[in-house]
Image 1: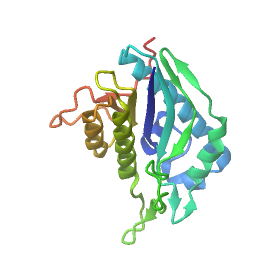
Image 2: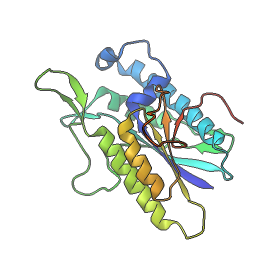
Image 3: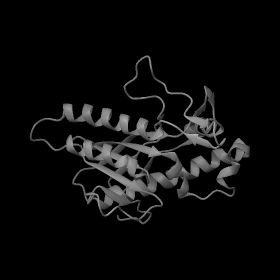
Image 4: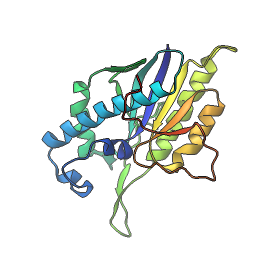
Length: 221
């Protein structure tokens, strides 16, 4: 059995289920509507990720033991409404099995870095630009990449010479900024995939064959 962790860019993943409101309205939408949307997106994500892993035709069963969700979770030190929605939704999430993949509903938030220590968690990851007033996320992609490298380095150190890799790293995101970390993860001996949600074009100047795939919504079992 292979254990896997999924590193999720929430901005990309939440496009799996289109909400009935625009992105600009997120902070004005009540939790009673945001929470069901989180649940629907995560359920769809479980199925799509499981289908994609099944399509890899691995010899072993795969258990996804953890989903780490990355987003701008705090404005200064105050939780955003999306973080509150996730915390309400998390206890309601359920396991899902598709083919050889079991996807557990265990959630962690990406500002709580895997390395731990006195400098974690990260705050103020959602900010207003002083020059334009535009709201933007900070440290989100680098937090995901940092956790990915921590995870893969730890797993590679535990692997025995000659044995197949014990772990699988799955990244859900559309941004090319995630690719260098995935390349390092793969170089350390941990099978790694970047699953694209809404972007189907791949930069032809990068060597990413077998590394980047589109999320599969169709069952391969």
